[in-house]
Length: 273
Image (tube, rainbow, N blue to C red; front, side, top):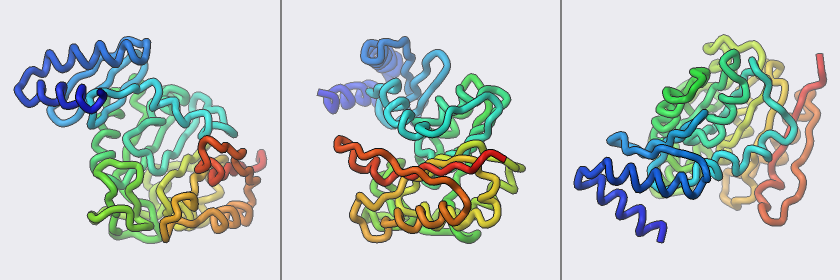
């Protein structure tokens, strides 16, 4: 039913009945989320706008309330954002957590959203431009050991499964790569209250790229990807060793039989200084 509805709405767009597609999608999403949401086609992507937030996507039928809150409690299990905080979102995707991070840190805070995939980065930039707080900086770059370029394996354009660490699809593209230490320096960041990292198996190399700048990170949540069984994505033991050797207190995620991938999340925090 959802696929049929998507085809109908996209069909309306293809015959330039954008206004009708927008009305139909807005009604459907508003009813689904029990929150007034305007949906519109911007000529390239679908925009979902509601009071206090927005999201851009490649499909007209989405539940933005559900998708933006789906993993937020997991990511923030050991951290409560405060006004003025700096959040580093490494592997931000299309920004499913970014709108909430932006709201939580407020106008005096900052969210640095890093995403290597050009389609997802495009959606992120549109979101950043339409959020109430203009506190999100989007960096279209992969994170790695050195400056240069790397191959990003494509499961699907804009997909959260795309990876620079493993082959996840038949296609790949070349993307720019920067060490995290360079990124923090270029953004003039001296303290990161929280870093969320979810980069499909590239997390260990990304952490190594911090070098001494790891001291700038107060808390972090790192999603390891051993659960995929894909060669090149087994990093849990290395990440755990890195975090503990960096003087961070590390907590493992609680087992969740309904979401076994959560077993590979690691939470780390630095003692109060």
